Image (cartoon, rainbow over all chains, first blue to last red; front, side, top):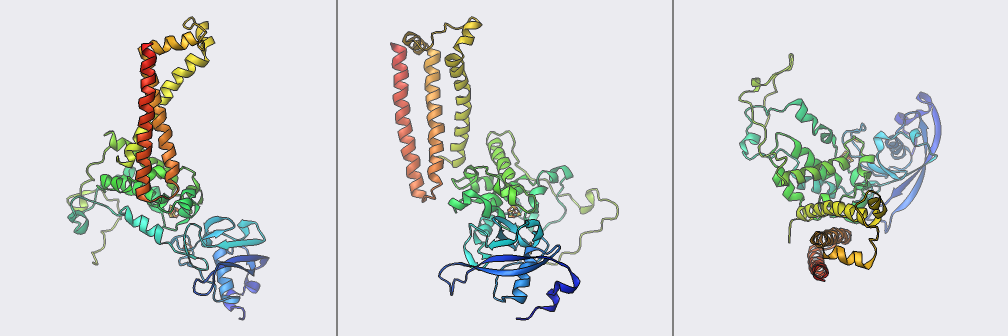
Length: 285
Length: 121
Ligand code: SF4
Ligand code: FES
């Protein structure tokens, strides 16, 4: 295969060095077990691990498979095990790794679908299990919303950090407990439990506490903190799990109970709107 | 069987009791010279007669029983947590909980009998 002109960096960018990509290859339809394959990748300043993979696909081996989309750390699809750590390939610059050889494997603690594509089903199923949506006693408050929920900036601050989760699954790949016990709900789902339970618009506290009140819930966390170390969005799921434990205890002791969510304001205009903030667009569905 | 969180709350409570009772134990048994220095200890805490004398006091009998219960619960809960990490089936988890509960209760009853018998001596 000839060099792709779009990827020809020789004229536009100065090649700083050439690194060896040592990439795990595995096609369950053909291979009995995974193998490693080496590629030489030229590196201009700023090239990410993901761009290196694109270089390989376009110039060296079109069959190399991985998952990616946004290329900007937003979609959460390019999680890989890069030089011994779960990282987003699009957010990891090759030169920052400070290595002549880069080993890339699919995320650990997941089955491999093909090459660098992990099967993220366990992550998504655990996430869905804790009902990652606003739960209200009155269904109509969600389905046929007539106004805005009232929430102060202070109340938002209590959980906003945990809304940054992009479901990349790096935390589960890093978690030593998930590594030995696939049933453990894991840092992502537990952090999201805390996120929704802390949201003053939500009324699903007891409901979610009951869901996670099993031997596979919060009590299984060893507080190794590996999840928070690798999280690319600063979510700090290990911290969320400890806060969740505290809230479960305070809830049980009737010290801190959130029985009712904040009300809906009568009309949208009841709330203080900053100057220049336009009306919400018309509903499309 | 109890809810998982209930086992955990009891574990925390047991830890709290251990903290208080162990502090009393450490003070009496290991800071005995300090107690003598401030005039509230006899200094011969390890002598058989001293051990007997303590056992005869209601305060010590009750604290021995509470410490035994708390330490047993705390330790066995820890053991259960370790065993549960072996990715066991639900049925086996329930069986382990039952065995630890019955075994722990047995040891507790026996230890309580010893503490009460010592009080009667
Ligand atoms: S908590 Fe962090 S590491 Fe885990 S899925 Fe969310 S963004 Fe990824
Ligand atoms: S490609 Fe979207 S996060 Fe990396």
